[in-house]
Image (cartoon, rainbow, N blue to C red; front, side, top):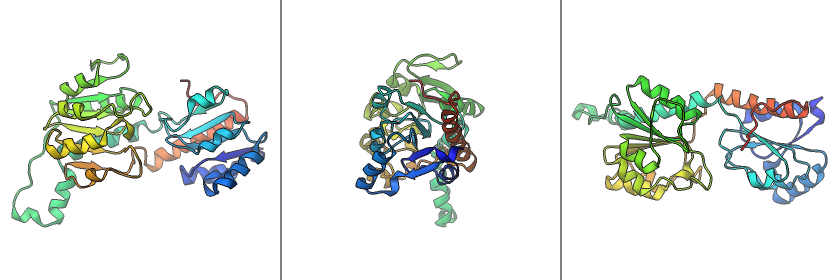
Length: 314
């Protein structure tokens, strides 16, 4: 019976999934406790609990104090919230939830591209304010024939590229290495930005990509260009982004991720040429249910000594 197995849940990552885990395991909700209570709980679970479930983008560092820990099952794809160096030295394995959210994030990326290029959010405000009766709304910019530069051509980047082709966009990309796809490759972000009308970030978080997109990149995208980010907010110098949007070095931006979520850079909230979303890339009912199921399947596989469904290997 799975109910006999202890499971430490680090944070409230998805209520429906946590409810299901509560039914299957003897769960312990770490986020509900004070710091002193957390430490006492982890001490009491030593030798009894080897499983942790958590959001992939952040977790409680106290989980690493659980010496009997064997598996961290993450809800999400990017695992920049997990201290891989610490756990790998201890033989702790990590799983995430890839593939099941690819379509949802790719759809949202195209939505941001359309919203910014055609200025849809401001067009909606224009109608609601009664301004249409006073004159026409300013023209937007079409997609067909333009170049979309994708920074990070992984699963999600490729899904975006496939959708963008239907809009008659030319696809260029930058990744750590070339991929076997019929798109133009650029060896640097700067080169990609120079070639792009629209620059879309799908890069993962971490020290390697921190603030890798800044003033120089925005200037190369240009005053008629658009920057979209559905990757990680930590990749972007948000101060430089706000300045570039304000002074006209960059035409517009569409963001679903930020460096200090849920806080948003105050400058960005004052600008009319940026569309701001509350990190909803995978936030569809269907996708979140599938992500939760994958968390559960990985936990069950560990308990039953079966191969993990989606182990993170590096």
